[in-house]
Length: 284
Ligand code: ADE
Image (cartoon, rainbow, N blue to C red):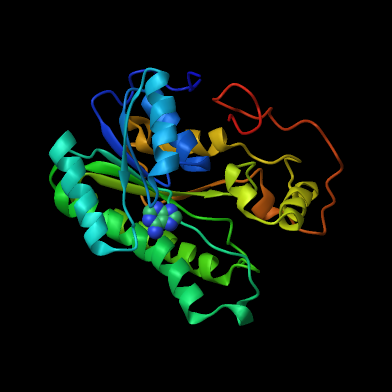
């Protein structure tokens, strides 16, 4: 399975790019695309199993990848990750902060432990990864970072913790874009809408059905693909985005803009789904 990127094959040749949450879903797709464009991809997550699977997929496709276990919530774990990657690779040129997680719950039922877990994983974890990337490497040599947001423009009912954490990441992205511009570091974010990602599988069937039901309110009248998010991440890491920093790009078929005063008749006219894995769906 060779990933079919729309970008030039050797675009990231000689670069080392860390992708957190690289063992599944959006992280896996971004890792495949970056590796297909010549990057060495460091796949990071808390558990090795999925990382090894994706590493083997990438190597089988002719790419270069390694798998490193790290808990992004723990400072010492993030420091150890950079110790290892810098010892093995010498430099880190790109960072995709895709690793994170949340659970569905009405706000009033969220315990302090649950709140902390989501905020620490998404917001604190992203901060620690950015800080170490900057202090250990990018501050001297420049680099590009892409953070992961969600479609929380109008709040995020059912996931107050993640909506708040992602709002924090978006603001942090703007701050760091200004503070680190002096070192040639660009930092941007992507905000996926309803994506047909393997992340959906973590929800109970009734939630999955409800998420699929959102499609009627998406002006594009379809879900997005993992590859459509990956391509945006790749663009933001690439030299084509050299003058773009501190922004968030929505990948949502205009779903965040839709209002109930505008009925959208069924149509089939959205541009066809783009899937670098070659088979529209999950590419698995
Ligand atoms: N993905 C989800 N949670 C994570 C964590 N704590 N560390 C690394 N990757 C993660």
